Amino acid sequence: MTRLRMRTTWGWASLAGVVAAAAFLAVSEAVAALVSRGTSPLIAVGSFVIDIVPRPLKEFAISTFGTLDKPVLLALLAVAVVIAAAVIGIVETVRPLWGVVPFALAAALATAAVVTRADARALAGVASIAGAAVGIWMLMLLTRRLRRWKLAAASPAGARPVEGTPEAASGGSAPRPASAERRPKAAPSEMQMDRRGFFLLTGIVAASAVVVGLGARALNATTASIRQIREALRLPAPKTTVPIPQGAELDVDGISPLFTPNADFYRVDTALTVPTVDPNTWRLVVDGMVDKRVELSFDDLIALGLDEYVITLTCVSNEVGGDLVGNARWLGVPVRQPRLSRWSPGP
Image (cartoon, rainbow, N blue to C red; front, side, top):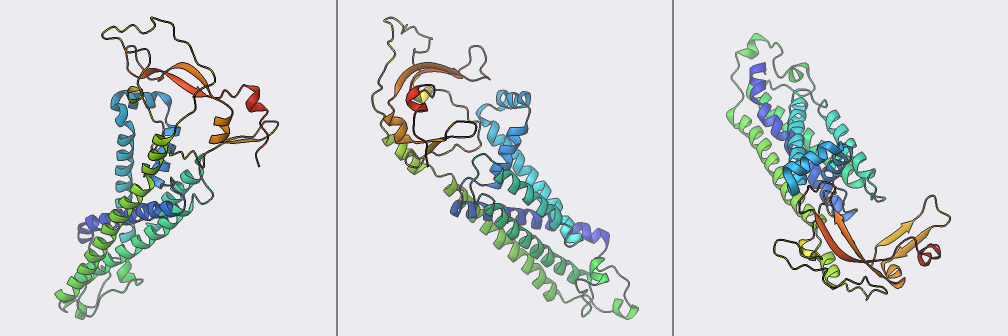
């Protein structure tokens, strides 16, 4: 195959790489939904980027995009994945197995980002490894089908280059006997079968990746049950309350109320995905450089007795006159009090 003809295949080679990357992400999401939720490679890499980005750049993103800063980050990561996957597809088509190396390296980096997260579980890396195996397999399979199609179109009938031979490695451009050059081109039906096989396989893999990936991502992000638990949760009355002086509420138009309603309280998420906490399984663990390890369940904290505090919170990125500030009543147990420090060690 001549260099000019090879360039005409770059688009299909890029598509093969992108579809293989989609298979990698889809399988990773599906396995994560079954084994260890919250171990999405794309989310983990995005979280890693957030961690290493300098603070001025973070503040610029917040001030520029507001609450859309994280969707913008994910969109940029998706674009980077598509470009990298397209290049890998071209490399793998032109030089078999050369594209597998950067694909495997990218998968290894994504796995490292998953397993090094603070909330990583024992099987956190399984999803990325399984996705990488399927992605590499799809990359090799799709590019092999593409080469068969293009080699059939460039080779004479009965003299198709066999993969692994010098002629196939050179894209079908190796010298051929004069008698072979006078032979007719490969039968159109044969080329159509190779082309049809590439498109059919690409379509099936792409559609499966979309369905499996979106379904698994939705399952991974499901918070309906957690939301129901939170709405049904009722905290006991606090042991102590904060008295509010009469007249503290000014009731002046244009001035926010003394206490910010829950629905209006500002919220800035530092994580790409909001953690889902189930009070039935949540644990507060204090260990490390302490005299004794302490582990408390949600019910343990409630049993200690709650105190009321009136606290004003403001975001570090809040400007003068901004709305990233709120005042509310908070219920909790201060860790400095003896009732917590005397708690018996957990198992």
